[in-house]
Image 1 (cartoon, one colour):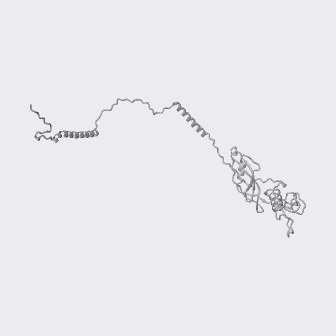
Image 2: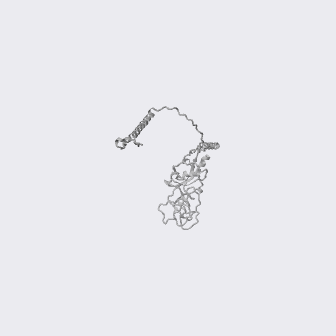
Image 3: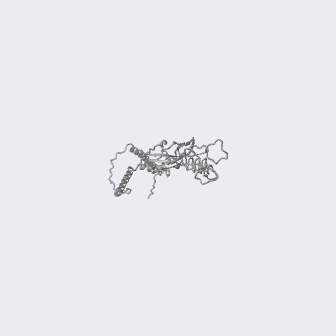
Length: 328
């Protein structure tokens, strides 16, 4: 039996039994490379064809149907609560509209106040001679005024009364005090000057006040008080005393109480105009109420006057002015 020799592929007996790997690999790798190149070009051509020449497909028909699903994020509203909220909002809006419509608007009517006319001011009430105020002082004597006869009354004092001089002056002028001439007072017949009703009798004295008068006051009059005349107080307009002149007089304001009540009237204000023309001791003798008294005093305190004068010298005088409050 003969041996069968199997010759594997790639063995060539002519090559002395040597294996040729190159020839063995050519069929395999050559086929794979060719297939890969065909796949790349085929894919590229298919892509270009899809882009430039797309294939028309039949319309898409969906066989599925939507299923109703409960929206868990949806807010659930209660009709009853919504109705109540709507009613409350409507009531609040109506209340605001009613308040705005019926709001009380206070119209501030500008008061028309007449200016103070000094020419129409009622003159001071003329008192009896014994009741007129005034006064004067002594000459800073160490003792109260002594009892004695009164000097002559005069409107202007030239020579003040004094203790009996040691020597008689060459020109004798009768001593006087500034007291109204029509004042009637009891007098005594004594050699020295003094007060007829003074209790002290002894060393002559014109009193322990200040000024050129007689008494404990300050001034050139008689008795206590200041200024001239008798009985205390300041000068009065008249008998040589010229009335002060108003320079600046602001209009007073209405009080809120009088404006609401539509109250109007006239307020008489009493004051003293000092030698600088400024009001002093401002008061209302007869109050009218409704807050107008305070408003009148507040306005009069801002007045400025040209001072009253006596013989060209500024003097303090008592004055009464009328302040009118009137709404037109």
